[in-house]
Amino acid sequence: MSPNEKTGPFHLDELSLRLIKKSELIARVSTFPFRTQPALEVGISIQGLAIAGWNQSLFLDYQKLNQMDNQPSEDFRQLFVQLFHQTHPELSFAELAGFYFQWPQLISKAIFAPHFSKIYELYLGKWNSEIEQSLMQFVLLPEAFRKWAHERKVIGADLVPLSQIMANSKFEMEDHLVALAHRNPSRSEGTKALEWLCELLLLDAKSEVLLELLESAANSDWLKELESLRYPNTKKFDQSQTEVLRQVQSTKGVRYRWVRQGDRGYVEVSGQLAQSSDADRLIESLSLNKEIFKSHLEKIET
Image (tube, rainbow, N blue to C red):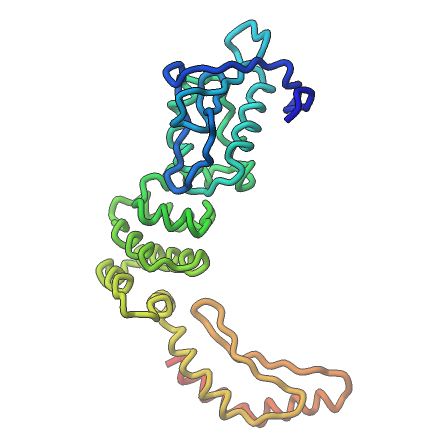
């Protein structure tokens, strides 16, 4: 970055840069244990707050010139945000949670630091109260789960189902989360499993049954079985799908398709009505298959 390049609302020539010793630091941000940090010849700090290269003995310290009092200006807070982002261009939700956990301690020592939301929004979008709650809860989760969440790029919205569980001391999920992490599912599979686990516990499912399902290493269908526990009617619908559609008498231009929505399922009938004969064909097809569908639906309802 050149001396005349703009950084926030002021130029770098309004800043002073000096080398300081590690012993002169007032504090440092998290070391982000899930990621190998870039090698730096010297660390980087802002008014004694280390933001990168924590293990170095010397730090390049940014300070604003002509700061007449101890109250930081908004532009200096913006400098903090921009330098932090430049030294850490990519951070996961898991890493940000670790940073957020130590923020109260940092802010007490470095009053120029911005509100944490300004940091968060550089990486993962808009800040809100649910995100804040997820960050506070995340650091309390087992390390194995936090590492999985980091590797799979899990975000705060994926962890919302945990909020109700963690707010109720009746539920213990630590072993379940560790077992889920050891299965190493994709983000999509993992967040589905987490949602179903939380809902099942809230529905008073047996905790030990759920844990056994997660820990059964030989069970490659664990996610389908978990879904069956959450949506018990789904299995019944799926088993009957092939049976009923196999019995349907096909009619040109009319299509029958099985559709599932959560715990419910139904047969969808579709066809194109371009001329009057198409309507006759659709009505004829429904009439031919009426008894098949009626019998099938009665079986499901009983």
